[in-house]
Image (cartoon, rainbow, N blue to C red; front, side, top):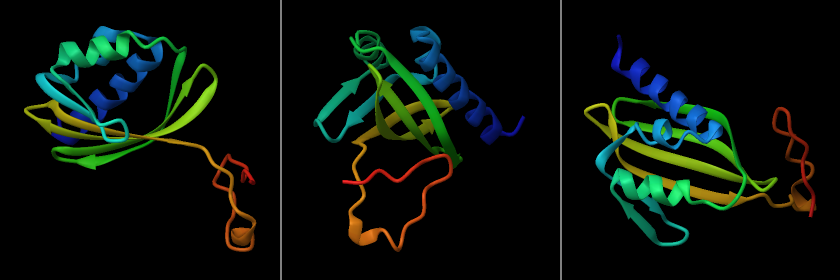
Length: 134
């Protein structure tokens, strides 16, 4: 099987497991010594067990919607909406692979915001979305 297909399949299972709350399957994709960075908070989590513990201990009701997975070789990006207690947060996950496992992930988070009126004439709604206004 093509290595890129295997990686994409592993990523899709990672996100399905995240949605199911299956912590063990969710973190099977990570190398034992993987690193997870959250640039907005300045946090680094080192090792699969630590990454799993911080996610498994999250107090919110979380749901995951994957909008797009792109990549090839050792670099893959997932665009998702993670809903925490009913509030959506947009997320981009950049995963670096070695030997079929994630060795480094950087995850960026962004809250939704309203579009300013000055861009009204330039923008169209994204598929399946409405434009939120300030």
